[in-house]
Image (cartoon, rainbow, N blue to C red):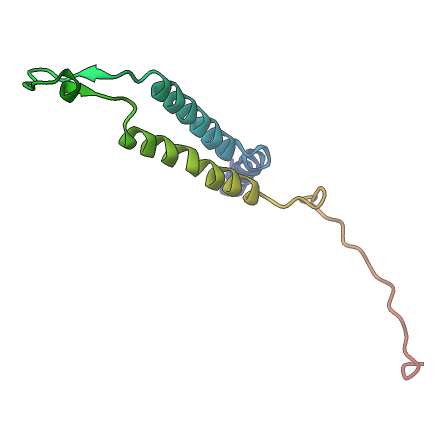
Length: 117
């Protein structure tokens, strides 16, 4: 098998992967998984008591959850959704019909001008 044939096979595979948009779809699916896991984690947060806390009031030893740091993380993960969807929809090949690899040359009729006779 010559190098041109190998190159042609690789280009055909690359065009198929590009046409199906496998990599962008995998990235969006990965983001959806992270998004879902973040929301589940956030919903399951519970207040907890600090170990070895010495205070006269019990409320000083309780950490309320979710905290503002938790909310900031969730906000950041949710906020990235717009950028991810925007990049997904803006990328990819712009299809304008099927392109043949081996085009037949088309001959246009040559028009004669008045000067040529």
